[in-house]
Image 1: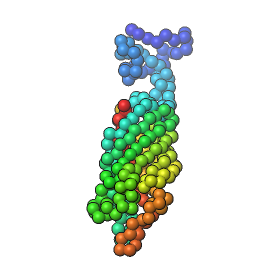
Image 2: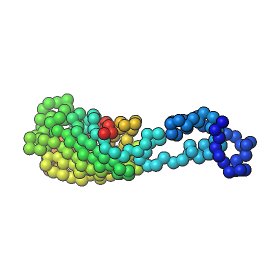
Image 3: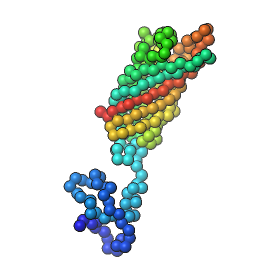
Image 4: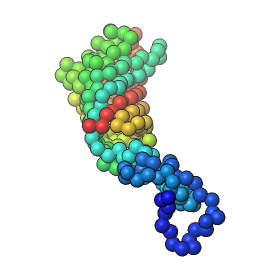
Length: 219
């Protein structure tokens, strides 16, 4: 029977122990733990050991290169008559993480945003100068507060203007080599030199809500 080698008198044989079958898979191959008996206080310390920031229990670190495989970016505008939403699923991008920071780059064609009204889509493309500036691009960094959340600073280029947005909360849901990243923030059209389009002579609100929902795969 395989037993741990302990200093004489350190542990009493009468102290309760637990069979450590749950540790299988965390030790080198070829070592069988079926009959290994570990003192309860040692097992408890193992279970309560803190998980480092940027890592998932049993999933390892977020470090490395990641590629956007799918997802969507949407905008929501407000008018006194109604709200409207446009959605794009044509997102290209990547991220590289070295805890506690990730850098990221995203690109979305302006013409790929679709709402329920083709006339509205044409108006938004005209307002954002989609012919001269066909893409929205994002460069930024994400500082991880934990394996599930962080705060981003983004440089957004829209309609030929680049503006910095900071303090954007980001949520991360990861499973092995796949990750889902979500964020919500607001931007001002006038900050990008865009005059808000009007409906019945009344312009939409200057503030536009942006929702990001991305799926990434580790390269």
